Length: 96
Image 1 (tube, helix red, strand yellow):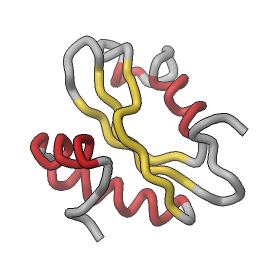
Image 2 (cartoon, one colour):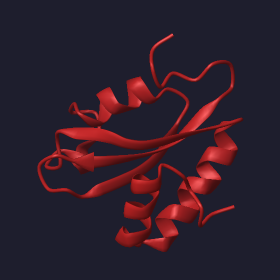
Image 3 (tube, rainbow, N blue to C red):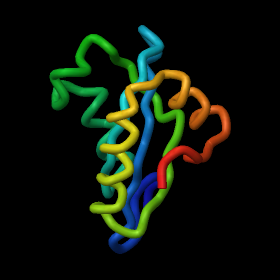
Image 4 (tube, rainbow, N blue to C red):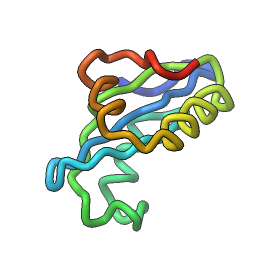
């Protein structure tokens, strides 16, 4: 199993950061290695000018629906400072 590949039904919420612009991107997946490769290739058109992207945070969840729920909550906040706290602390404290 690769790093970031979920075992069984595990899924991830992740935060990527553009090495080019410093911008953050929040997402969720059941295979983090595959998803990062997709983001850094032509498979994610919306991030084409942000590449290269690196994973700066990831958290594993029991299933994809839980991961997607947390992803939506984080995206609704639209707060760079909250994202930076999560990245720094390597923990999501503001969303339950």
